[in-house]
Image (tube, rainbow, N blue to C red):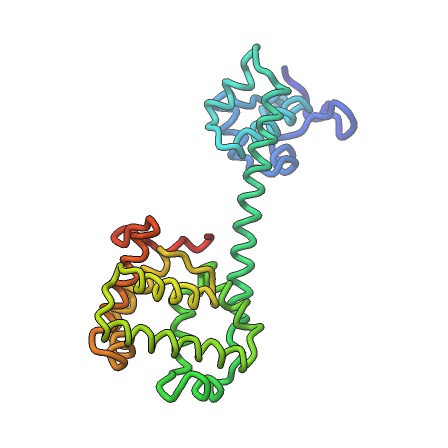
Amino acid sequence: MTYAREELPSDGAGRLLTVGRAAALVGVSVKTLHHWDAIGLVRPSGRTRAGYRVYADEDIARVHQVLVHRETGLSLAEIGRILDSPDADTHGRLRRQRTQLMERISRLEKMVGAVDRMLEASRRGMRLTPRQQVEIFGDDWQPSWVEEAEERWGETAQWAQYAERAEGMTPDDWRKVTARTEELNADFAAALRDGVAPGSGAANVLAERHRALMSTYFDCTHAMQVCMARQFTGDGRYAAYYDTMAPGLNDWLRAAIDANARAHGVDPETASWPSPEA
């Protein structure tokens, strides 16, 4: 069908749109419409005498159907077969598409929530001044360690969780956490001196106390605790911190955490930290 340019209705029902106006209306590029025409996916109803494509209302409706199908992950070839099938269950197909799109929206909303938490974490966190940090955590404490931890973990959901919790903690809250930490470290050292074996009931209790302490900051799983123990043995500063309490404590603590993780069904060899959106 061919239409003279001057014969194209300008508005109202049944109007015909040039490819440029059609592309702008549906939010795709002119190049995309040209490609879909070339492969027979969406062919315009006709052309002007000068050879320009013109799109009728039914053409625009088909373009919208293509866009909906594409959002559900179908290929253009699959979309073409669906739209051209005489036996297609249009109503059922649209209901399935709606379900798929709602599931995708839900996933995207969760991702947006994770990003929002990360953004908020970059503006929040420990409210203690550097002087208060040294006063509460001891003379060996370095305030720069907080910045270092944020550089390493700042894009994770766990850091966002820590930042949210830390923001609400008072100096007295931090003193209580520090006291719990010192008490647990003393019990670790005593267990090593007393010959408590990693994997024993007593060692597992201590490992669980450590995981509970870490959960003060974020929800710490057994796999995450294993990853932290790897860091203890891989960083000389951690090794020095624990080994000053009792020689060999750094390695004992990792062995105790690994054994406790195995008891809870986690293989330390394959344990990994969650991804950023987790």
